[in-house]
Length: 264
Length: 372
Image (cartoon, rainbow over all chains, first blue to last red; front, side):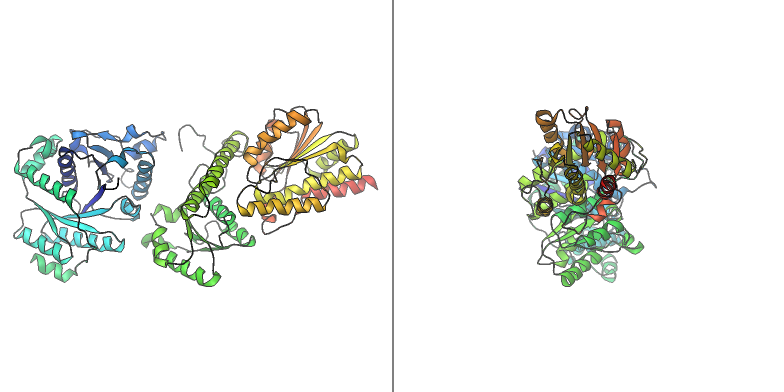
């Protein structure tokens, strides 16, 4: 518990947070760490590639049924024993997904004994922090490290920059920037520069490779389905970087003009 | 709603209000409601009568959309300047909790030199005792109460919830409010019983400050029995242990015992502290069995439904409640007469002496008419 890493990966929607989270989880589990992944997106697909493509019942599904929830009802063991939890949410357009996260996280914290034993807990949070509920994991002291995922394109960088503004507002430190490549010119250079200028560092450059999508389509992480691929190795290195990272800073967001200059 | 619970449709006590009352019992000087201006208005006003300041961050539509971190931290600073409190409570509301407001950050922002009890509570709990529990947990964190008192309170709360589900206002899906039996008829019956030389037990099993008025019924019955020369036929039980509960609650017990003594009323059996109404019933039950099983009637005030019927069955029961929804459940338990002291609670806030009850006043007036 003392050395437990509890991280959240933020970034623009669709940039690859769930892929990165599940591959990092799988790679860390391979190294022998006890890992849990908590999907906080109402779409509830964070852990799907760790469970061979199967969906698991979400905390909010069970709460809706009014059942007394036990740990084994919501914590499922996936690839290499990675514990998988999905928060879930209401039907789109009904109720309040933000409140859902607050309630689900509280339920989990109150009853999940296994959480204390983990070396790494990854909160896979939705791309857009649309309301107070979506920062509940951080606000409730459950997350102690944040990473930002971006490509070298303007819009994902704009979102990353906004997230940094938000992190500063809620007094949460940034442990690094991860670049998930979209094959943009000078991409690594742009993202590295961005990371430095906000006072952080680039911890990994993940090249764009079709094999990631192919494995996901079959319901697996590349670590499991294509363990010898180059990209699997990249995820393993990222996993090691995360597990040994000791630096973090309160990020200083850039003004929009500087951000545009960077991507030009 | 959990599948195994009934769906109660009559209005229920609020957990937010329960949190406010608990903060008062913990002797906070100011309670700040973080939410819309009208939330819990009526009880906030009553609590002001009881000597604590209650203010609100008055969140409006913009507050719901943009959050109220600044509003709360500035309210904290403001009350600190205005009232110089020793202890502050901050209480959530439905609106602020649904939008995910944090209470801790604004408290940090305000950076006051005063301990703050933060209660993240809304009114959407099946049992309002949840509001008490959340407040006590936070008070424990801040060091306002110790672990031992916390555990004691927790057991009492569980028992209180149980009592309400069994025979209280949470016992069925809908209970209509009722004013109960006519007070003059019930008063007349009590006088009759005493005139006939019947022996009775007067059991006060009251919740905290409500005892200021329920104790008046003990006094009134004593006055009637004395005037009729049968005071030896009446035994008084009351949960007035001065050494149990939070400091404020002990003060109430002391104040009432002092008044009773001045009025020459003896309490023969102390059944527990003023916060022990959910468990004092068992003490009463044992006493009845051991010493008073053959008494003819019982006058039970406060939370009468918390007294087991086992050793009351053969007695004529007159019970006095302040809950209009309690009449039917009490009748069903076998209480022959049920009297409601309507609006009792507001009259017992901000007082430190026994307050006259309607039944007490009726008894006194009818006694006069009987004697002269």
